[in-house]
Length: 110
Image (cartoon, rainbow, N blue to C red; front, side):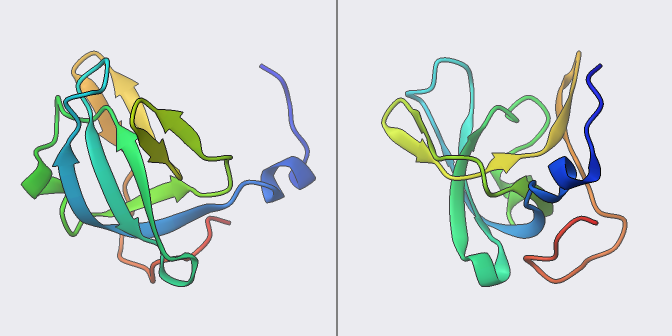
């Protein structure tokens, strides 16, 4: 494991957002959804996420998530991903990182 310094961590824009829209992504190589989340002052951003094993679209709508919003955009087939949805890979599927209590969208992890 490589150690980082505080200034490395400060570069990561890890903020809260609320999922507004979820659509199937049949063109993806692995099962995935297209997800749009509202990050408050950073706007609504979209991503592709392989979270279909543990979550339905209806279960994701309105859910507050943690996204990394300052990676370069990534082309995933015909879809352009604008943030990384944080979660933990398990044998059952990806478990989304969760907040203990609601906070304003766009709040940065510290």
